[in-house]
Image (cartoon, rainbow, N blue to C red; front, top):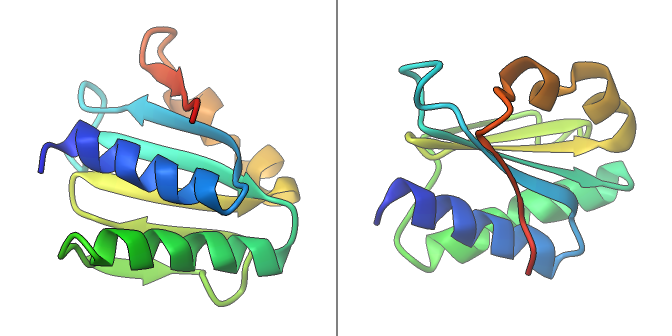
Length: 115
């Protein structure tokens, strides 16, 4: 599956569970670690966990499992690493604090996901 298509599938899974402010950041020109970040917010630690779990479940149906996960149980900032696509799910406070979009947005590489 193409990386961009994988990013869109992750966005759909986040949207299905009412994830907020879902964006795709093309970071392929800025790092060799991955091509895309998918970033979303949840209103609570419970929702952050549910959003991460839904991404894992929906992508798992396609035979895709994350290479590794971090922070999902704590529910403040969950990271799901799918190799060329890394999914970040924040609670609102953590998203404002870390503000990955500010660090990685070049003015041309940010796409807001619309379901």
